[in-house]
Image (tube, rainbow, N blue to C red; front, side, top):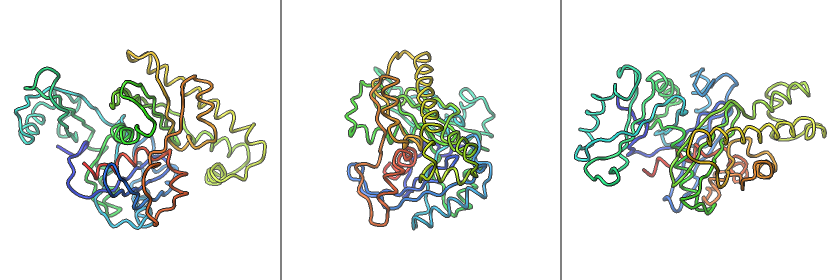
Length: 354
């Protein structure tokens, strides 16, 4: 089954990022060099709605998507979302450049068993022509992406329940790469630099290594802001919801900074250093030129300073909407606060400009 895991889109789309802790919805307008945030909303998710990057409770996710759509006032029905890299197999293969798209699709379906370790009738498959092989115009590099149909079907069901038409199921790493390439100029990143881009969410920290405008490495590890929330719960006798609210809005005892937060920040730095060591051991690269921090944990005050001091690499917190215009319908303060956690949803919303 050919499904738009990579997507060739011809309809208007909104980006919908379904993480383990929240649904983010973003609608962009304008052009790639003059973007405007038209609509934006975040809706929290129940703790067990998404487990291990997979939708576990479809009804809860559908309800959260619907609430976010209504909160933002979005009328567009076409949507793009993403599945995590662990749910997708990607591979670059070579195919004759003379093949038209429909011919290529037929050939890939016939040859899919060579590249995918599952029966073809259990898989959602898509492809994207990357361009000619260097030095051989007669052969194209073709990126293929596949995921178990059951992984994709649960997203289709959740979006259908929210009365949205899921047009593109992207790969999270590709969405982040798309966002990075949009904003790299504001950080004056040149093509030769190796950039470690960290997305540190509630349950998972993902490192994406970028080089020459392309993602060259991606790895997930189990670590995130949920650990800080649980420590706050235990230390101060709060519910999970109360602890999460206190973490974001304040109101905790003065001892919180030294007794709880500092320990978590030290652990975060250790996890960043550990992820870099995995990258160095798995690739030809022995260093990175800079680190960009994203995800909810990147909003912790001065975390970039601590990482830079301890790891020894220039570090900044990413703001992918920094140069966007903002509609009067959108809270600029809320957007600014959420910005580090918006890499995926920005990358998905950019699918509207394919």
